[in-house]
Image 1 (cartoon, helix red, strand yellow):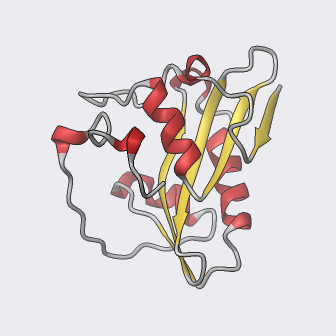
Image 2: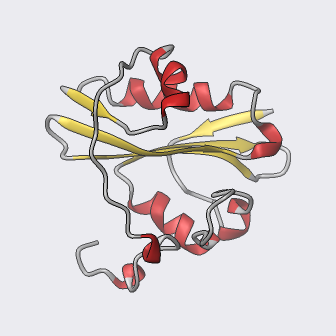
Length: 144
């Protein structure tokens, strides 16, 4: 059975193995946990039998008008079971009081997000691949 929570209470780095598949330089489970803890909003899908996180979605906001969803991931072994759809549905519900909710995705994923009420738009991005595993020193960032 899959349960959904909006906090990291009880989640340890060992519960976060198996994400960022295909990334040449994956964030460690410790960095992944910091990512979740420092996001403004999260929803986790947890396998209640094992305690393992099997999916997650994050959002960052200005707390007033706008929110951005940078991450949605479901472990490959449990994809196709509606977990991603449920994570997005729950996050969009959490963010419904914001004027704008944005995310950037590849064209082949646009129909998935459109089926959940979002619509396509143009975007601009910049990637610093040398920091793909996490920003150096981010665990000691004094702004947090």
